[in-house]
Image (tube, one colour):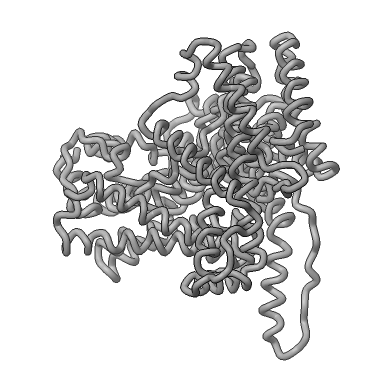
Length: 77
Length: 522
């Protein structure tokens, strides 16, 4: 199981300068666009050695840091 | 039979609606299919065969994919884990094979009919550099109308069935209706099978509100097309087709008018398309969302031709980046250039591929490759510059919420989009560069090119009306619902005003050249 801090750390590396709360909306507020999401995906794949399929790339899996954490934990299971 | 023509609006559409509404519910899909095939035949003649073939291939492969998925689900519970894993691998390979065959067939059709002459011309340019004479004869095809739309929709159908997000159609006519449905076959939007098939195959009852809302939207689209786009086209055509004669303000006005023309025409066409489908209870996907309120070029493309961007994002950009070769490329970059570039370079590669696809989708020529590269460079440079800007100017993150900074971002995006429009409309890359350079030279002649003062006023007022409507939509005002809440005389005053505006200010008749829909040629 991973922690929300690990996800927040990845987000701050991908988008320098942002400070987000675990439940803050990321996609609809424009904090993350489709390119940022793919950078997050690359970082997650590298950091946690995950295999992410196109079906996992739904907006609901990236709309908050907590949603990203859920995705990571689900993929690891 | 264009969407704004008299036969379409006054004969075809009412007859189809009457047939659809009067037939018993179970026969309504037949009315839609009959109407779609007649419409396509009138537009494409014998080239309809390509549409029939694409639909047949898509239906057969979709059915095959569905059968394999059913078979896998039925056999899996009886197998032990090792055998289940082996069976899954086999089923996956078979499904991949079917999807590959479908993509090869559909993409092959698209390349053969749309891109082969361009590829042969480019090859001949290379061969001309050789010391001996060798040329390949360029085939000449007539591109069937809507080819780029129905082939991509057919591919999305196969991808969705393969991913298990939608069930395949049982009958051939169902896929044929999905691909040929007349409101979206010529200029899109790229609708998904899962989104519109319920309304196509199990149509709702005729609904007064849906019908009147649909007619209102068609009227609004007509206003945009006939009052604004076709009027602006005369100025634009005169300057862009004879660019060597013009410079400075004339080129600037022509570029701004082309942006206005393309927006009014394409979004107007979408209004006519979505309005027509709404009359039949079919909810097509929105293709525009106030694009000129975008604060970056990437946001602009999420608001302009939304369904093309979504198609490419979902079926090209994202799958390419999470593919195994790209993941390996990411690892290789990470070991060579560090974590940040290892993360970014595969994304940039996917971005480049997507922009090239957007460029080439718009046309088979090097100009469109340059057009795609222009937007790639803008987005890529923006991505590169952002961390540096934040370091140099830490207050930038705070400014982003400031109203004036947002306005500056919108103006900046509008200017960059206009450069792209100049490139897009010009007669080749050489002409685009000449026109860009000519912007710096003064223009001595009259700015009233092919239009008189009254025409320019109509355009200015039309642009202001478009802006106000977009502003209301941006603020979440539902204009048609607001009109529907008004008393009957006021509602009809609005409708009659719209019709009169089209009749009085529409650019048609002896003094005007009728302009074909620009996106219909893609």
